[in-house]
Image (tube, rainbow, N blue to C red):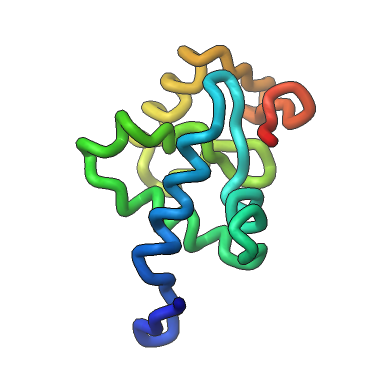
Length: 114
């Protein structure tokens, strides 16, 4: 179910829970994109809403849900204007064995899921 807030349409909490369920399945050492998760949920045009769901995680929930394993479709970390969160995400991914090239992109063929 989609709930409208002004111009932005936000899914209900079931969509967010579905996002979290999929993100929990991403294995250590692998990454996927916001768009891929949206497609897996049957909403291929809802990549941005997947990002909203991950951003809505409570700090205490972050350890249960590997949010850091979700990056943009270009293979890059996306935290516009938030260098602290971007640095944290990259550090967590490096710790998991994710490699970035000289342009800070991952290799989807080697590290992508599913």
